[in-house]
Image 1: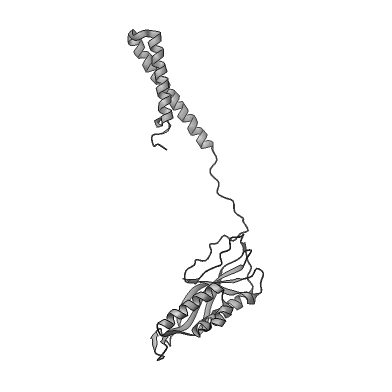
Image 2: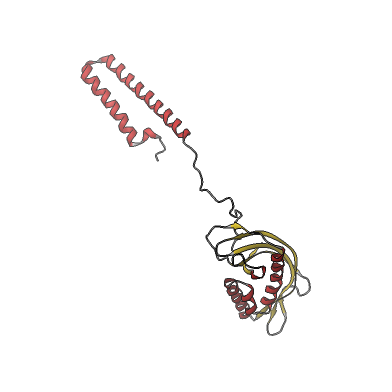
Length: 239
């Protein structure tokens, strides 16, 4: 769109030129070429009329634009979970269902399982027990754990984890989709976390005595309407 407004466009210029041309032709045929001062007065009058018509046109168009309703955004289901989904930071990822989402109620039994999963998964990871990790996590998460363990082994090291203690757990969001139920829990926990040389057992990094404190958002998934024991780790987001 041109910045000069409606009359700066081709249609505006054509309309203005046509009106002026018509006025001039009328004056030439009506008054001849010797109209003198009367012809000049007619030209000024014509220009004044065109200017008044243009101002009237702009006023009417502006009024009509103000009367148009504002654009309405797409409607959404008020029962759907409106909080943002957990990011895919850290490791792992969600299945990414695209169906309708609804809020999901989480029971004390679910919270107990989440706490248990925290300790069991950390223990299995430290022991490089892939069978246990596949039973506790989704296939995508288990694959990521396997890649991490393999990368650490290539360096001749092993990640030793012990004394995992949940300090605080808060539900961030829980929702249900046609394919899965999901629950994201912010977990603050302490643990002994070290990297150890596989050959010598020497600590390469980390404090083997003083527990480290970490906060992460763990997202769990299960089949829709499943039992508390069906929850599997689906994603971890560092905070």
